[in-house]
Image 1 (cartoon, rainbow, N blue to C red):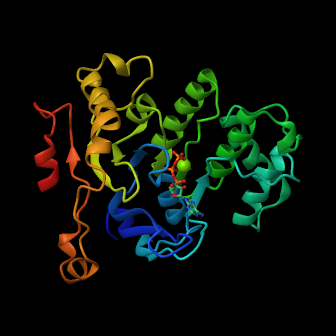
Image 2 (cartoon, rainbow, N blue to C red; image 1 turned 135 degrees about the horizontal axis):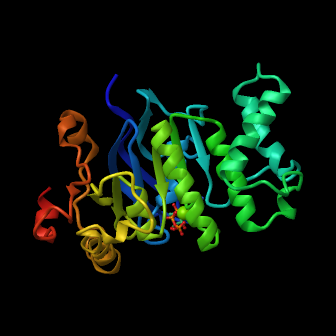
Length: 305
Ligand SMILES: Nc1ncnc2c1ncn2[C@@H]1O[C@H](COP(=O)(O)OP(=O)(O)OP(=O)(O)O)[C@@H](O)[C@H]1O
Ligand SMILES: [Mg+2]
């Protein structure tokens, strides 16, 4: 089997407008690969299409062009090989916190006895630091608690691929920090392949092997894959002292403040026919390593990559 667990080729998404010519091309020519066990985050301005990409990987949305392979299989719907943490928790409103998790566990392992299902669900609820309020329904939980139930549910499925859409966005700084620590621990033990969306640059650096930077929409694309080769294990309190940490951080912030706009729509869309004939022509986001590279990549270098 190839090293690539997730492969997205030529993804494009267009939402039809009210009349001809009003169509919204959210993104096009999005190509990337995620290696087995890789932790990749995606950063970009609001509305550039991050959630849409994640939903396509999850099989919950269809691309207008292109396709996604997970574990070598074409994605044409949701599957038990992928777990998702949604931007807005998406819990079942009629089930308690615990039952939201155990319901998913039972769906994955229908042969398990009740006790085993409950123990498994509770293990992951505990991991997400949820030990009280387990019998409460989602509307009786705080926003942060609901989000943590969603995280516990996704982890409990023990899938090879984990897709997370701003999973910590609604959490207070303390809880966020402790769940980040748990996530690092669980990820390093299980080596899941993770695709996660975040708006938090420090969180992205702490967690990622690579950080995809998206240009502003419409017609957004992944312009760069920033390589984070800060050695693991990483600790929240220590990582800022790593030489080059601030170079890396500044590179990403500079992208968000300036280049995400400058590069927006700057690349000629390559016609599908050209891609299909020579697969090697697929334009992947160039890997850049601001820590190792003496000079930050110039826009001209990016264009030719
Ligand atoms: N069902 C839909 N119909 C029409 N347009 C849509 C639909 N869903 C999303 N969009 C548009 O597609 C674009 C991308 O949306 P998406 O939710 O993927 O953005 P995002 O990068 O996740 O933003 P945020 O950071 O705010 O979550 C937005 O302009 C949005 O308005
Ligand atoms: Mg989103």
